[in-house]
Image 1: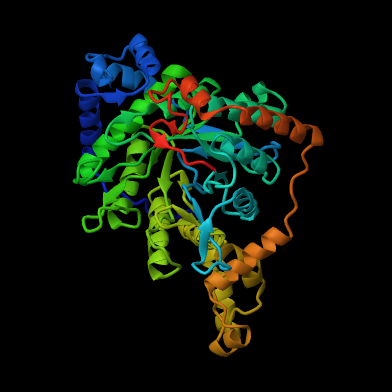
Image 2: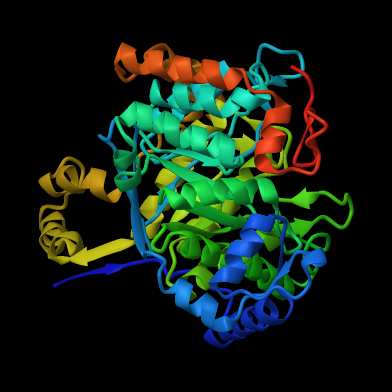
Length: 510
């Protein structure tokens, strides 16, 4: 006799409600559609069967047949490898994996008066190292945006830092066709050739539709490059209920679904079978401050719903966990990150991100990566549930303990099963107060700081041939010769005459 008691999957939508959201999405995509900034993408979609009524509005409508035909092409499983190919992560509709992800421009630094400073390339590399060393973090992303390298070279220096310091896969945003092609070229140098990149992807691209209902040009340009090379893509809506999507959560879900589904259909039209994740970073606008509220209970509800919607389409899902709006390492920080991680895990998301971030993902703390790694370990144990079989029921042990009038300390059964049954934390303190005081009265954050120090000071980097690093340096040297105006022209931007403006985003001088 053997069966497992698993935690029930969290659900906030009934089957009838899922059907209603789906049908509303189909109707709206066919009647209203999506704004597509790229003329090339609009022409491509029209050729494949999408409808363009008004070019001036950049409006593209998706017939239901086009959507259904292409959703069928999405793989239910895919794998990612680390730079040297020794590490493999397989994501499917049943698995659960964890990664980082954010947009941190600041990092916690206890040596500074305000305990925070601008990020550097060394911080990016340290983030890669710590992520690589943690057993519950399967993939890191370019979370830490270095401020000490030119904006036009960020992607290159980051990929070189990843290849020299990690065995795990890496995530990069779709920064446009030029930078995205650079990423493919650089990884080809690292692994040996383009065919290896296509058959064993090392990178996952990230595409965020701009709510409400806009697919912007720069990301579309990058999406085409990733999809043409069959690189996995994380498509994640980031709607904010009350500001960039309807304030009602059902309306926000419908709009976000329109955005994600339209991009997924596009990826399959570009290259059928391109792996994708149905992602959600949907939340609300806080009605008091007007800011996005990543730590809100409403974001938790939206995250759970997104997992259900992804399962409805039989597509692997990405949910956000560990997000917090707190600017300190306080109770709010802990409450919000645990709530988000717990909801994403128990909702059945297949890839869960944002470990290590705080301040609405704008700041990073390596210590939080350590803490999130421990929280994830706890949640994995919880999700496993209680195993019921002849061994775990322990009839013989109970009988023996009764007959001998003894406890279970040191028995063969206890020794054999303790590690399997009981999660042993590394940061949580369970000592008596006296012993805790004698050992320095360290709290969770103190212990996490020590672990960061230990990892960085004992870290053994992967060995990459010198010729590969030379080739990477030569490539980066060529990239450094480009101007922002070059990028603007190559990406087909309206602001090509302004070299400090990329996609409408003002770029500050270094």
